[in-house]
Amino acid sequence: MKKFLNIGSGKDYKKSSESVDWVNLDFNSDYKVDVKHNLDKFPYPFKKEEFDLVYCSHILEHVEDLMKTLKELVRVTKKGGIIHIRVPHFSNGIGYNDPTHKRFFGWFTFEHLINGYMGEKLNLKIVKRRYNFLSVEHAIANTTCSWFYNIIPKMMYERFLCWIFPVGEIELKLKVI
Image (cartoon, rainbow, N blue to C red; front, top):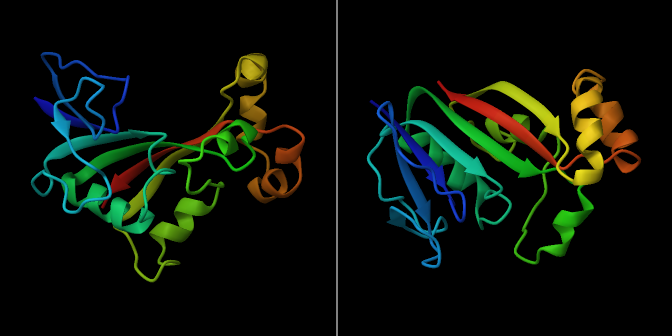
């Protein structure tokens, strides 16, 4: 049976099945959780290489120390396992309304983090990365145009087009190596 971790589960409680054992972690007691823990407290209450997959949707923008958090996610994920991340793109204006957001992300953010820009390399490889639209008014763009946004040169999009056609988030799958 595979074991998956849902970091900062909040309202998105994931139920286990015959093939997947989900562990839902959040610090907020108002939500149903399996493990209550503050992500800014290290180490996390899990063994090294305990999970096949770590799912982290719109959580990393809230943590105090991003690099320390990523190192901890690598620690609890098995070699060859996946860390699936969804974070707000910096062109997402709605995200600026949340006072708990400490940072936003661009296409190249995780390359910098993985490759030692913060002084230390992470044992991660980007295996998937894409822009996603989130708002209702962009639903059509997500289904009809997202292919375009995901093939054009990223520097061109991030420097010029993102202010005209903003995306909601960046979705990544990082493999622990």
